[in-house]
Length: 370
Length: 255
Image 1 (tube, rainbow over the protein chains, first blue to last red):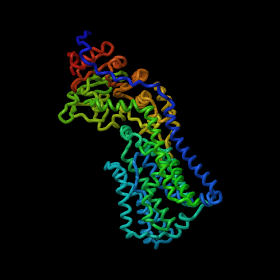
Image 2 (image 1 turned 120 degrees about the horizontal axis):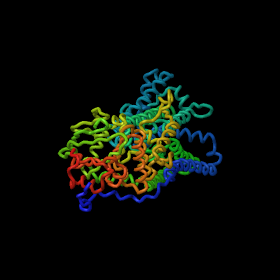
Image 3 (image 1 turned 90 degrees about the vertical axis):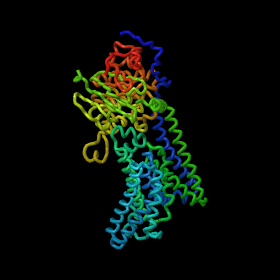
Image 4 (image 1 turned 30 degrees about the vertical axis):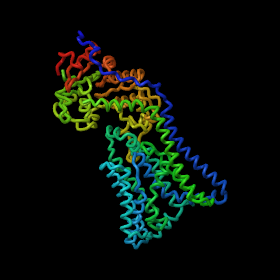
């Protein structure tokens, strides 16, 4: 086979410059994961430290079962919202609407209960619960549809529904809080308890446990992480990415509806004006809990601890007579620290393993082959 | 002759607006061979792979799979036929571990109610997944860590092994050695040989002539949207391949 072409004159497609790479570091992946675990552990320790400090400063009043019961109750409704929000943030999305959806669900539920059985009795209660869950789910489906199908950024979609749900609640009520809740519901869910544990806390704990199992042990949870990690990879292997996103937002909506009924039974009011910052409290808790705002990874357990920290601070400050406004300052610092820790983790991962992928991507773009 | 091919493209056309990416291009691969696909930038290699893997549809021409004409409307249909593709972006979910990536979209569910509730056979997938990686000699050092924290060579090996584990008939590898170091490149090329030995048709798209000559059985050379030569890699040289690619050397099999 004779070769007529002088090889030197035709520039052979340059072999890619090999990226000088240290031999694969097995520890990095482990370190990345350990880092996540570490953050979950770290915040548990931080929370315990806060508890210890307050207990030392106010042994009688802070370190008391009744007080812990109060803290748990104050976190319960946020925790129910936090489970849904964790799933959404793991997909790489965000939900600003849950406080308004909570209010809207409560309002609609209360209005329906008023018409069914005059707002009293179990029939009225059950119908009210179903209505609240349905109303929440409907908003969640709307959010999910707009994010997944209309491709509107989640922040804008949920900012829109944040305003719309609250506005509709005000239209329906004329801006005046509804207070119709069946007594049976208030006495059971709102203030009842099982073995000394408030039913509100029991409901929240059940939701949290289901959330943990769902995210860590099921295909739904894994696809949620996968979609947040690399949506294109999911599409390639035939996962219905849009469907998964819609389901996750619908789940969050369902939980916001549940939170709506819990809120209604606990406060005996639709608290129309009281939930404008709920979304920020919940998102702060999720992020402090170690869930990455960039998607792909997160823990429901971390979210619960992330919500407990502000609640404990608020409670402790009140007991100590510190101006409760300080709690906002401290929580703000926690929030920024938590995201900073997440960034450190991410850049460690990038240094370890993403460079070749990035290079490959650069080549792919510059090559524009056919 | 053509009956022995597992997958063929016959006279495939594809245009993007006024740009004709493929003009009557042919391609074929046998079971258990490594068919390299080379060509300069813009020669149509990637378009050919996207069409054969179902990611795009041809404007004209025919795809023939195991002797039967087929049409593919999406990559899932290609995968159902045992055709897998590893694109350059690898398409790994960085936060999941290698086994989760291997079974992503193909999870084995528990039987009965638990399965319907979404619970997976985690230990079964873990064991089978490890075996699949080991069979291919893809040395995954850490099965429990997220792949995002692993080196480029590891990630490439995982992506290739994942595709190989599912590819019953044909596997397309788009520049699998780009951006890899010497040691990792050797690992991936060894992986390619083992996949070939399983009886799968391997299609290797590469810019690296030495790598192509090392592992390929036949080399398909594309230029300006056509296959201009099919060369026996054993009797070829870098000079000949480059000549065919650039058109300095004409007169081999005109497609």
